[in-house]
Length: 488
Image 1 (cartoon, rainbow, N blue to C red):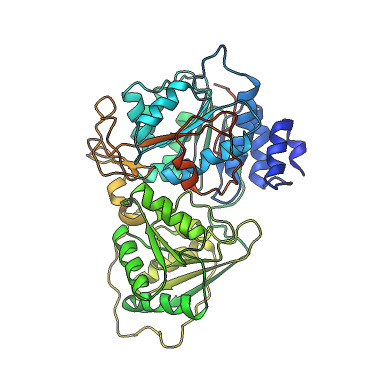
Image 2 (tube, rainbow, N blue to C red; image 1 turned 90 degrees about the vertical axis):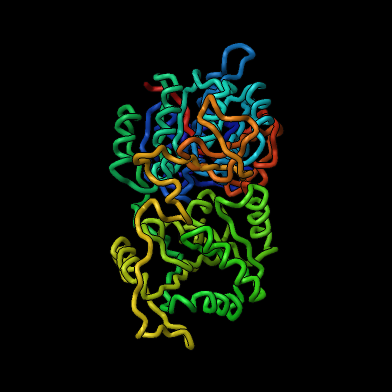
C-alpha cells in the first residue's frame, strides 16, 4: 500500500515524497482513513511507529478543507504533549508536512520567554502544540482562545497521566468546545487511560499496531551482570573497547545522570546529561552535539528522553533498570528504527534482579546474559532495596506523581529558567520552568514558540531547531500528533 491510496491531498503527498517516504507504517494505514472520516480514535502506539505523521497528515487535510472564516486565525487544532522536546518535535512535523498548505502553527512550552509566544498567538495560528502547564499560563493571561478548537490530540497520554497532569488536562478540556474530534495516543494501557478515554472519546475507533511488550526484531538485547559499584567502570570499558561512537544511556534519577556524565568525562569519554533540571539551552545543545557526534554519550532520564528521535542510533544502555517494565520497551525502542539494526545493553546488579524478572515476564522471554571478563559480580554482595513505584521513575518523577492530597506539579516542556509560576490567572508572564511538572501552587512557566517560514524537517528533527524559532509559521506543518475533523 502507498500513501496515494489513503485519500490524502496532492500537497500532502508531495510533502511526504519530499521527505523520502513511499509506504505508510501500520499505524498510518489504520489511523489516517479513520481520522479523515472525522471519528475519535484511541490508538495504542509506541514511539517510532510513525504515529505523529499518522494523525498530522489527516489533521492538516481536514483543517485545510474547512478554512477559518474571514481573516481571523483561531486555534482550530490543539496538540498536548508531556514534554517540551516532544512538543518541539511534533511542531517540526507539522511544519514539514504542511509546508505546501496555507496553515500556520506554533508551539508553546515552558523554559523560554512567554512574550514571543504571546505575540505569535495574537497574530493567529491554526495549529497549536503545547505542554499543559504553559497552555494554562496563556489561558490564565487570556492570551489564547481555545473556543474554536475542532481537533484535540493527546499524545503520549499515558506519560502525561504518570507525570500528574490529569487535573491540568481536565482544566484544559473545560476550555474547549464540546463539538470536536478527539485523538488519544498512548503507548500503554491502564485504568486511568480507560477512564480518560471513556470521558473524552465518542464512539472511538480502536487502533493498536504493537502490543505493549513488543520490541523490534532488529534490536539485539543483552544483559551484563555486574556489581553496582562497578557499573560505571564497565560502561567505560564497553564504550572504549568496542569503539561505540553514539550511545544513549538511561538512569533513574537526574542526580544519577549528572554524576555518571561527570564520571565518563573523567574517563575521557565526551558526555552530556539531559534532564528536567537542565536549562532548555543546555538540553538543546546536548542533543544537537549528540546528533552531530560532537559527544559520544548522552545520559538521560526517562522523562527527558520522551520525544527524542535520533536516526539510526546504534546503542542504548540501561545503566539502571527502570522500575516500570514498559519503560524498558520505550527505552530500547530508541534504537533499531526504520529497519536499522540496534543494540540494547542492560547493566544489572543484584539489587535489580526483580526488575529484570518483571521485564522478562512482560516480554515473555528470558534475555540473554553475558558476564564480561574481569567484571563478574561478587556473589557475597547482598541485594539492597531500590526506590520503586511508578511516580518515582524517570529521574525524580516523584515530584510529578499522581495528585494525592496536594495538587500536582506542573512539568515544563521547554527548557527552563528556574522561576516560579502561579496558577492560571496568577502566573507571571516572566516566569519560566525547566520541565513541565504539575506543581502544588504552580510551577515555573512554560514557553511557546512559533514558526514563520516553512522549513522541511524530518519527523525526527532535532527539538533544538524548532525551539529557537519564535515567529508564527505560515504554510507549515509536519508529522505531529493531530488528526482533523469534528464528531462530537
